[in-house]
Every structure is written in C-alpha cells, then in structure tokens.
Amino acid sequence: MGLEFYDLTHPWGLGQPCWPYFADVEIVRLHNMSKSGVLTQKITTVMHSGTHIDAPGHVVPGTAFMDEVPLPNFFGTGVVVSIPKKKWEVITAEDLENARPRIRRGDIVIVNTGWHKYYGDNQHYYGYSPGFYKEAGEWFVEKKVKMVGSDTQALDHPLGTAIAPHGPGKPDGLLPHVCEEYLETTGRTVLEDFPEWEPCHKAILSNGILGFENVGGDI
Image (tube, rainbow, N blue to C red; front, side):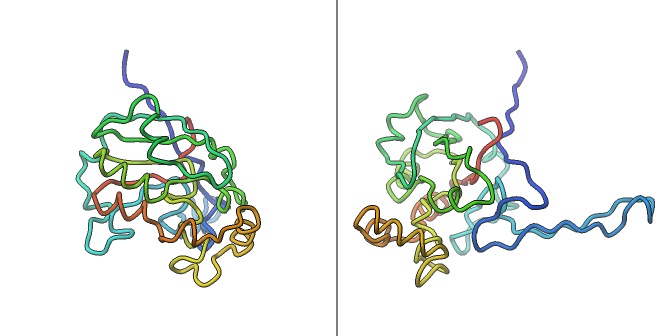
C-alpha cells in the first residue's frame, strides 16, 4: 500500500477568518483575462492567517525563521490524538500523557479538541476556545516532540494571548467582554488563572519545536 496523504488545513482565501487584531486578506487582480489575456494577482496577507506554522523567530528573538528551519524537521512520524475539550478548558499534561495513541519522542503531534468545527469569522472560535498553556508546553519540551499542532486559534489558550490583557492586548484585552464573562463565570480574573503571556509558545519555540495553529481539514 502506498502513502496516504491528509489535508489538515482550512480553506484559505478572500474573506477568510482572521485573528482579532490582524488585517484582512486582500487579493487584487492586477491583470485579468478579458482585458490583458493573462491573470496576475497581488496577495496581501498576514503570515499567521488560516492554518499555518509558527517558526521559533515568531516569539524568540535571534532564533530561526521558517526558511532557516532544517527540512528534516518537517518529516517524521505523525500522531493525531483526540482530547475533546469545551469552552475555556485547558489541555493539561495529564491529558497529553493519557492520550492514545501514545505520544513519543520525535513525534509530530496534532491535538484534536473538536474545536475546529467552530472555525470561522466569529468570536466563539477565537475567544472561547480551549487550549494549551504553560504545563502543556513544558510537557512537549520534556517529551522532545518534533512539532505540535492544535485545532484551536493559537498554540496558547486564548486567555493566555492578547485576547486577554497580555502583550499588545493590554490593558483590557482585545475582547474585553470575554475577560469580563470569564470573571462572572468563574469568580476569578483572567490574570489569576492565566498570568503569563503565551507560555506554551515560548516553551516549545525556544526549544526548536515548531507549532501548527488552526488545524482542520481531514483531522
């Protein structure tokens, strides 16, 4: 039996969903068939739109950009694990340790929380998703996996990103009402439960582990 290929990407193009502070994708036809007899298009996009890979240089100064990552890093044993999660739930080290098939050293790991079914231009997908946080990032580093991906909006829980009052999201977060709702629902502030900005990003990328965000398709 030959190789089987699986597409783990969401459709990409004009009008596609974007993270809350990213500019929209623009596709302009500079030449079209009826006028020029040739089609030429100009695409303007943020590199982190749709399903994509984060290189270490995304968050760690002085580390590799995508063109500097050795090609062997993109090849290996892939494993997709199902860890169903609901609104704002955290993917823990225990979840990862108990996942089947077992995650092993050198694996390319994709975590299916089920959240990809909400992918779209909506705040539910971006502001209320489950996700990794510091503990998961440290677990991936200890396990020495090769790459990590998730079917959620980022490599970190949304309340550990600028959606909450972190980094460029200070002082109120990009989606303040989400932070207010978290307080009303849990009785705790976002910063009590998610005090660090993108610790999973920093843990894995600083150790040369690349990350996939917004995984979908055939997952």
